[in-house]
Length: 316
Image (cartoon, rainbow, N blue to C red):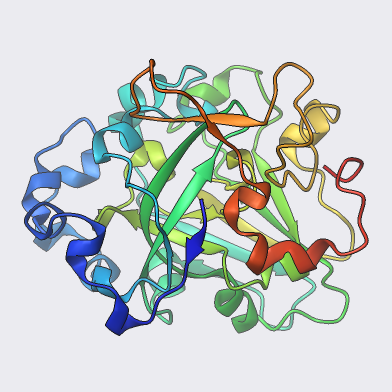
């Protein structure tokens, strides 16, 4: 489960997956179940979606086998589109992620409301091969397309009072049928400590497997924090707020004994209803033994210093 950071010269597209499969954009266009967006012709794609990076340029790359596109897009946690793991893909076509804007507010010197196109434009898109570990005990390895969260946040010049960053998902029952049910306190809210957000690993993702982000995976833009459980990687973001105080995040407010604010992947801290010591990779045969869960999901070299001196059994 180690994470390998390689220079451009060390990585070939063939190291990641078959070039004929990976670079064939039309193949993914034909998979209608993944997202209504994937059916659009190239001419209909937003400008930012036409400048995809070379997969050989991945700055961070997990050395695990990639989870298939089909598994990544058909087994999801996204309560706005349904509580079952298979609900999001069934309901994804009804969600329209256009138009879209993102508000940036709070303790920063350059707040504002930005059209998605303008929001993404300043940043270079790159490939990030990250593991995603969910609190229920399943995991995936996903080739995301996105840009550095830290670089984006610096653009808005957070001030000295900015101790946390809060993220909010769209609240719109007409586009998110799951929000008509009171299974969560809508809208969905998540947050990071500012030093966590400024670490090089977290990204704002706008695509996966070489194409725009499918609806069921958090279109049109989501957070990915690879050393934390999946519920921290909030989807369909419409607001980013710099705060002096810790945000009241959705799952932590609903069940604080089960979902900590930090939510670092930690095999030594069990969920009250199940062990976190092992995990099952989505796509593996059920007869295949589960694998051991790595501390910080295998990213300890990059993030362990963020928690020096903290008791991670209490700050879970």
